[in-house]
Amino acid sequence: MGEAATYQTDVVIAGAGLAGLVTACELLDRGRRVLLIDRDARGNLGGLARESFGGVHLIDTPHQRRLRIRDTPELAWRDWQSVADYDDADHWPRVWGRFYCENSGEYIHEFLRAKGVEFLPLVNWAERGLHTPGNSVPRWHIAWGLGHDIVARVTAAIENHSHRDRLTLLFETEVSDIEMTNGRASGVRGPGVRVQADHVVVASGGVCGGDLSTLRANWRKDWGNPPPVILNGAHKFGDGLLHRQARAAGAAVTHLDLQWHYAAGVHHPARRREADGLSLVPPRSALWLNARGERILNPGPMIAYSDTRHLVSSVLKQPGQYSWQVLNFKIAARELAVSGCDYMTAFRYKQRLGLARTVLFGNPGLVTRLIRDCPDDIVAAGTLAELMDGMDRRNLFGLKLDREAMERTIREWDAMLERGPAYFNDDQLRRIATSRAYRGDRVRTSKFQPILDPRARPLIAIREFILARKSLGGIQTDLACRVLRACDGQPIGGLYAVGEAAGFGGGGAHGKGSLEGTFLGGCVLTGRVAGRSIPT
Image (cartoon, rainbow, N blue to C red; front, side):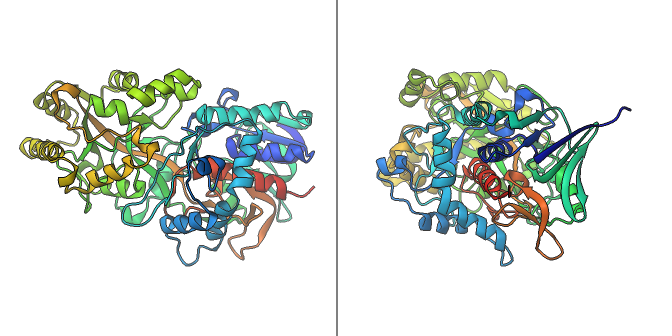
């Protein structure tokens, strides 16, 4: 083997996802020499953020004020704590959670707006809460152009920067070790490369991707055993390699069992890797059933947009640990979406007429495409008997539908809908009615549509698995993004962590849950803090 290529720089950033890019941008603003190194190809610059729906959790924005949504950092922090359910020892996660709520305007919204990111005028309302409060008001701001545009805008700001000549980019290059000199981080090393630097920033993402072995090894105990089928919706290089290296350097790595998954994953048609998953945004008006065709009640019904952690934990208690959503084409066209830019084409390519058609008439093209692309997981049929036949052919582990119970559940649901809102005696229907009171949700929620309505067919059943997405824990940092030692809580000289690698701040800023949009927001927030904190 030849000698390793050696580089010298002020700051080396291991990971070119959104958090790494924002850190680099801030450092260039201050005239620092930066080397950004990433395992992936250049065409995948931006990591998982570039594929995302582009929703950002923001507080007291001009968009909210135009909609007469009254929001404050104090209200946001109350909601954040309700969902986080912090443990008593979670000092740094609390500090970071509060910092997000108090500074999202300056650190996230102003930064993205300055880079040219535009947000759609209607603010969405995710994670409203179920048994405990979630978002009291809408805060999920969707970028026009989705996550792809966020990454493109930040990348353009870097490429057009007056100090662009001070940035070196290395792609398809693994960082396998953090070099330490006299207890201080002094660079990174990988196969065929060595980078010497005054400061090292770990921006390598979480532990939920890779081959899922690290995720399974850190599975939360109160969830029981991991399901036999987990789909991978995280980054393929999110394998925890630099978490292990940071721990070897003395860093505290915390809360790796706190993971953020989704209950509505289907197999990705591209099959880019084993267990490749596509994350659906589940319809509100579908019935959520288990593999036997029984409605999932834990203790109440499964309700989309309410509490993602509750949805996941409910599915994990079911036979086979997967689920079915049953609906019809009309409901799907109005409500079904994909949490990713490749399928949401009107949003991704900024097609204003296409978006207007989606708002007015739903998105039948998306539903047709999903039925065509995902035949293993999506059944479309003209009759309920045919639908159940298709479901049973796709049921796993020897499980079979109780057909009489399933038909009874659907017909009773439709009968309640036919009686009208004055007689609704089901929490799912009451929450749909509440959702439709907010205009941002009314445009994408069906008006109490019966499932077996002949005019709304074909009937559709979607087989859904737990989809791995984010690590909520990570490398522990203080409010300057300095990595803290496990032994005494003091900073390790020259070592920083940002984004998902740092649990979005403090080794677990979200606690046990998330209010959605806080992942992209957390990458921007921590990247800006690190870039400002690293001394010149």
